[in-house]
Length: 77
Image (cartoon, rainbow, N blue to C red; front, side):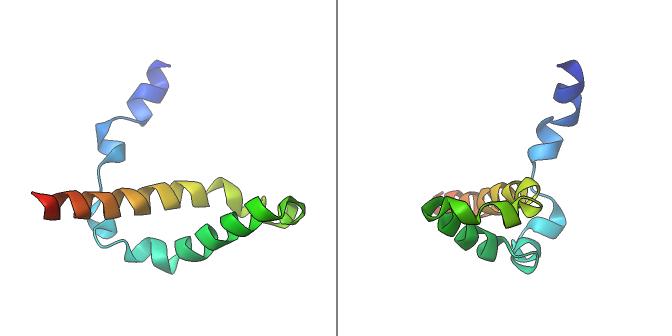
C-alpha cells in the first residue's frame, strides 16, 4: 500500500502542462473512446474487440474530464 501511495500521490493527480487544454487526449481519441464505451454498454457482445484499448483509455478519459472540471470550477470563482 505504501508503494501505491508513493506512485499515486498529489503530483500524479495534478494537471501537467501538456494536458492544460485537453488537446492531447482529444488527439489520442478520448472522445471516440467515450462514444465507444456508450456503444459497448448498449451492446455487450461488441466488448471483446475493444479489450486491448479499454485498459488505457479510461485513464485518459478520467484525466481529460479532470481538466474540463477544473476549467469550469475556475470560471465559477
